[in-house]
Length: 243
Image (cartoon, rainbow, N blue to C red; front, side, top):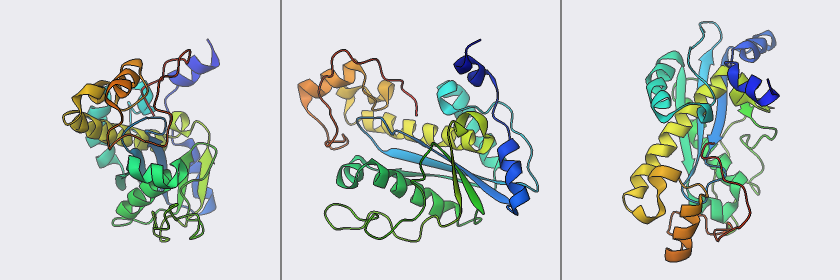
């Protein structure tokens, strides 16, 4: 069995979350994004907060890319009951164009963070990936290129632990990826009703051949990331429609 298949076959656990209890943490937030590589639509960030003092496992949860749409949708109410708080934040294509992808990620994450703060303040965050784009930075880094502010400087100020492949190994992060994926997919299906030619109900804004062909014929919509390379790119591998 290859390493990739082995990782896919093992369910995420709470081992890393529970290890944080030894540092005095009780409320742990798992965080993941979807839509990073899309040509159109928002980037979306999910946050799921768990209570280490009252936490049990949750069967069936995997990284959202490993689940079918039906499986993901069925998990949403279970995740909401299982968690102490959960939310999804979004940043539009316009915001990504104005400030860049990292600023868009931080804007979406800060919106999700503000939402969960209405219920509980997490002690620590586990963030999928190897870079902390969630934490508050300086005011300069929170500004758009046109001088306006994308994210208010009252976002995440607790410790953030970036962890590569956390969506495959940490249950709270996998749960966050499911919530973000379901909500973003629903937005793209809704937008497809207004712009049916791009096939967003199927490709969810990612760079499929049909999507690029439609862009060539019709040009970009207001929901496309206009600063991205939107034209045909021959000899490139297919894009996985997932995170």
